[in-house]
Amino acid sequence: MDTIASFFSFITWPVSWVIVQFHRVYGAIFGADTGWAWGLSIVSLVVLIRICLIPLFVKQIKATRAMQTLQPEMKKIQERYKNDKQRQSEEMMKLYKESGTNPLSSCLPILAQSPFFFALYHVLSAIATGKTIGVINEPLLASARHAHIVGAPLAAKFTDSADKVAQLGATLTDVRVVTAVMIVLMSASQFYTQRQLMTKNVDTTVKTPFMQQQKMLMYVFPVMFAVFGINFPVGVLVYWLTTNVWTMGQQMYVIHNNPTPGSKAQAAYLERLYKHVTHHGKTRNRREKAIVKAIVSKGRDRNEFERKFINGLTKAGLAAQSDGTVVKGEGAVVVQTEDGTATTTAAAAPRRQQPKRQTKSQRQGGAKVAGADDTEQSPSLTKSEPEIQAETKTDVPQDTSPAAAKKPGPKPGNGSRSKAQSGQRKGPQRPKSPSKK
Image 1: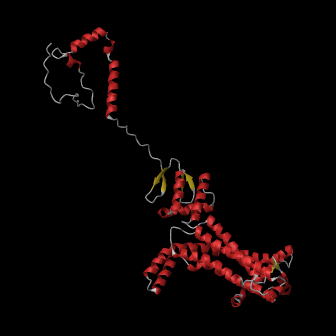
Image 2: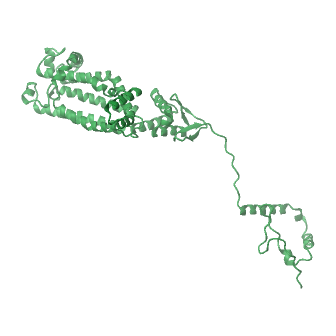
Image 3: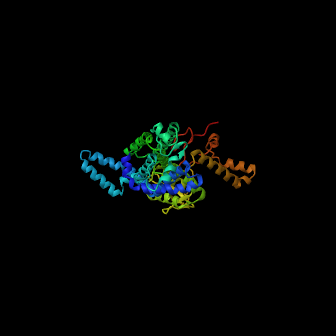
């Protein structure tokens, strides 16, 4: 570790200068020789470095998502050229070039932060051995050696002997308890950050080897921190714990506001966005407009959560535009396309309703009612009863029996076709002879 720290010794002077400047500020508040002044100086150094690395962090997010998208194509290339490693590498580089993806972009924040980490380690090691380094002179060296964080000196390690810890003005128990707690917190924060990334911010619709690698790293990194942490000085543990907490908070912010498409985090985000848009009737800020614009531009390539979001807006009478805005669609009609998406169209003219077809009994019943109405309106009802009886006797034929005269005529049917009476044959009938009295 000393060899690696010496390799990054070119940056020890800037790191020591930044720590001293922060120490002057906090020393005026808490005291120059206190652990608060030196500890907060290290924390401020971490915050300053991470703020400067935010652009690299954004590139890391984009590169990680691009690598997740390319995993199926990469797997096909590996299977196609599994016996030709050179051709496999050429095809991989060609795929990266066509997609504009750089695999090293996902490692940029770690690579950029490593020089500061080893430089700080080199500075704290020099303080532990009583050597001046960078802008830290003899008075500052003495002040740093007397600074304790919860009873543990900044330069003390978990593996230090009791004599060495006593020279720094502390006890071995205090040093080991403080370092053990910090190592546990450091490993737990790293595990939680990686687990949060795997469970919430990974596209669940695509199963790739990249997911298995991330799952393996979720358990490997905490173990690595625990193993190497016992050889880190307390000041370096403060530095690494602070950067882990910063990474965890930064990751939570990204998952909450800019989740990976197809992940559980995106489903939760689109649900919140749907409630806000339907409540206000529009997108509220530039970030929401960018999300809606990206979803609209995908068209048929939308995932399940994005289709559900667009369908929900359409059912609520809203329409997402290509510029990311949301407008109210008056008289909108939901039209489902082949890919399951919903589109908003103008309201069509009302369809003409066809009359309901009546059954035979309803038609015959209607005819009877109509006949009854005609009878009521007939002028024969105004005649007296004797006149009606005389007309009835005149209408009855003389050559037929009274029984035949009493039989009613055929009932009105549906159409011009008449039906035979019950018990009578179809066709022309032979006249019956009059009955003899």
